[in-house]
Length: 381
Image (tube, rainbow, N blue to C red; front, side, top):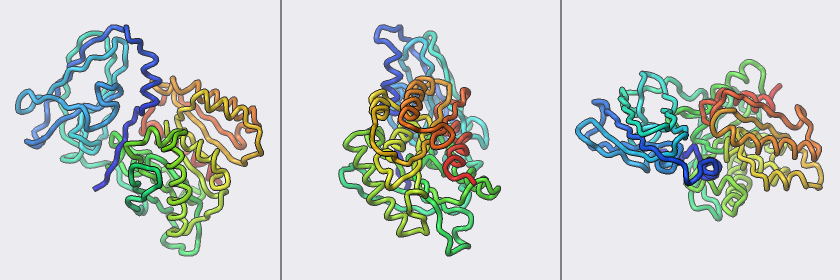
């Protein structure tokens, strides 16, 4: 069984959000009633998962609904007036989320908190029962289970995507892209909210159209310690060592890779964008490129980059961000980092690239729509 832990609005992001909500603001009670579909198992437990602590901060198995009768479940949530509340209903995991339209992974339910309100939801089915994922994995993937890292509390799984010619051209070697939140990048059945980055579909299309080099993609699953592992902390440094000292050697010894730094990159979103930057900055002898998608950059980091006076690290950095919700709160950090990098010699559209999609939200669906850009930046031809 695949084990995964994928909060979308991570601890540091919640802190950013909470700074915008003063303790004295007026609260309202949002009552959510769910009329469960007939396929719901008799022993089911329903949960709500959303972008606020009382809704579990996107943990799909934390906040239970109360069963009112055979088919009706309910919960009351106290939320700040003016808050844009996003949430989903699950039976404890993202692949068992509520489905409302046949064949479609639903976006987040949304409501702006104005006053005491009752919302009734009536799903047609559950993701793991009657729903069939419209997308499947494109290409060949391999799995590596339970890698252990010194100083880490949890073992790690990997998903490895192999390019189109890998199994037919037995001599050819390939660059490697390492990605964080590995369960979110290729397989919709394991991804947060049931919608993945579509890295397999996008890379396969770009490769077959001649716009991108063939690469191997290694997805590193996250853990319950994700927030600390993806930051400049003791756990974060242990996680980086896991990648450098165990994961990369495992991949290089198992697959036909091009192991040199020039052919090794790293990418992630949100806190994954932060740790991608830290990996390439701290290990430029191992990695030459980083894709920082919707990254969380704090002022302390950008100040330290701005004051850097060492030798040229010879690295390339891609950065982007959206313009809706949490993305707007991440924007100042992105702008400060772009400025800091340019002050120490990075050149836009050479070893630095920036893209801003003002219509994009902070989720896998949005990242899947623009993942082609960092892929082309790092491996275009």
